[in-house]
Image 1 (cartoon, rainbow over the protein chains, first blue to last red):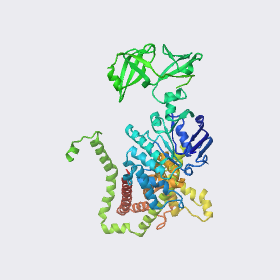
Image 2: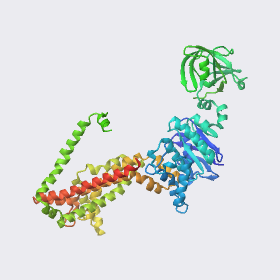
Image 3: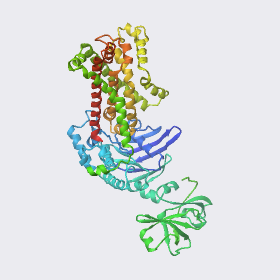
Image 4: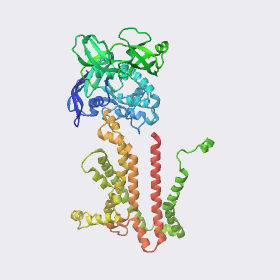
Length: 357
Length: 277
């Protein structure tokens, strides 16, 4: 097992940052800790690295209890959100740092260090930057150097704290694909923290959704996206329309409409419920296709690249419903603001209970 | 390019006015008064000038002033770094009081400091009495001068390091720890290079101030010719004997040394910053 966390708790004053979290990460796995800001995900990562001490629980890295070890004895690679490169050192010195601070006996020779650094820089495609200073590099390049520096000491695990969030959109996407590829090549057990669900879905082998210091759900991106365990996870994994209402005997109220609820609610007593529909799972057409269709008026049209976003005002609904449709469909239907359309809500997901979002 | 530059207008207004003010200020307050030293010295002629500034008593006073100021600056560099470290890195009750205390040598009339030291270290003073028993004399000795100069120079070092130390991101140190560096290695390889320019500036200022310091030193130094006479005192005693030209000559040498030191300091910093910015 790469990383085992057992009942980790951490409090800051009266505030519980981590509330009894247990988590296993297999060797060579790439896991995303996903959650809103302040949910405790970064704290958890820092606890694994030894940068914070937990109030309770155990951290086992590759079958060795490292709970009370200082960071330098844990042999973890840590990549910071803002790179944390050493400004007064060249790229070479930055990457070589972890090797040069080894005790004399364990320290490789000068040429070995040079070879290793050159190898790592080649791996992150930065071999040309050997003599540059961090200030002469762009954000994406700095983060590659930070990654090479973290990998230089052959860490047992690699921890990345929001590694892409300081980069601009294009570079972010490029770098995360590249990190995925790199991980497929070197297979170091890795955990990265993010608040960006897209990043987690695209990059991770497994997603751990965290909220208020607890794990809400864990699973492959597919599992978590298709079968969210609760309203929080569903809501956090993408844009949603939320309808507060009641569910009763297989029917759920959406605004003033009643539609069929998913099967598991066939024989339930009347309960408060929240129904969710993702914008891209809303159908739009010019003609009524079923009894359940709503009538709506297009209030706003938003260009979103390949998709077109629509705000629909529907009778009996307090708030406008957001829909996303492919650009082709939008052109075929010749939609424009003020048009009346029929709206079908596909795949309504219903959760009962008072889940605060 | 040249044409383009002359046509480019400066977005920030008021350059002419503020530059004019700056030149005027520097002239009126700094350059004109200091140039009087040159004008006072020139009529002497070369040989009397050399004679005045190389008299054994004067040379001894230079030696004393520079060596004591250097020792004091080195001591301040270490003590000031430590104090700045404590003030920046830790929270403790009375921190603000301690922080304010650092500035005291700036605010206190130097003569007051001098009298305090003289009383404390005199053979009957609190510390002096004990030290006399162990055969250590502070008063009327170079050690006493160093102690006074340490006090005077201390805030220069603390106040130049403090803001730089506050700026150091915690992440940088954490990164070093994660890479296996010990606390000492992190300090030595990451923090110290970062703090070095500020440390150099602070201790040079303390050093420059130490060379010129008069008020706090004369009370504790005893002013024995050839032994504990500092350079500024030589100027004073020449003035007392109405030897204005001689006083100017000694002052000129002090001025030139101080100025070239500050110039060298600037050059070192320029050279240091150039590489990685």
